[in-house]
Length: 318
Ligand code: COA
Ligand code: ZN
Image (cartoon, rainbow, N blue to C red):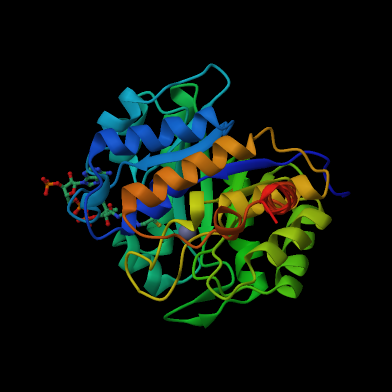
């Protein structure tokens, strides 16, 4: 497959980012952030998750958020769900799509959702059936596709096999997740090349964390292989995982979008408005977030700033 001239950015900050914040972000502020992202041109977004509020109290307001956000006709709002109960709640709230996570590691899957991989696969089938029954989309995430904090490095064959199980079930939207930021570009290239070859009917996407600074490099090689959909979080929002600490936030949306724009690859996103959303995320969280572009600006913004500084200096009396 050849590299795509246009990519889809899946914003996951409101879900993957906010789920680990220590304090509960007030519902109106979550809605404000989601709307700012929508106004920046984000058209595919994980808005929240319909999980047990005891496990993730940060997103206990999922239904209120989903009900109140702006919903342009071409926007696609995704809800993460762990089971049928979450799927029913998400669909009742008007989510366009439900997304379920299954981990490559038996022990981590048990910690994350309290069940075996076999039971998670049954859940995947139920979630898919429920979504189809409501004429909605179901997506699946293969979590810990490159490494697990408990079981260590994950063999490529294990991911290929698990993706095969969900593809055979009828899932067409399959996200490969480096949940702990352990992947390197050579692994990503090999994995995505094989997945694209073995499951041509699936629409594959990549979920990257930038824990070891390889997020953009991993995205780049996946794009070269033909992947055209990437998860990222605004300003790099996010921290450690829910269950085991040690991951940082996702690749920052501004940084990923900037890389693609600089390379002439379209995203449909307005960079100025995206940076506004990034500043809003920082204000809501109350600390500086790791996005480089938010701190340094795009190359065009950099040249403009330098020029303006020069002009200001030139205008000063000698
Ligand atoms: N939404 C809301 N409540 C839910 C729910 C859902 N999707 N699924 C189950 N519950 C409720 C049950 O109704 C039950 O409530 P009750 O005690 O009032 O009767 C309670 O949670 C326990 O149900 P049980 O089936 O025993 O679940 P559990 O306690 O073993 O938890 C999960 C299982 C999957 C619900 C929970 O582990 C979870 O939500 N995990 C999500 C983890 C996550 O999002 N990780 C990050 C993303 S990868
Ligand atoms: Zn993640």
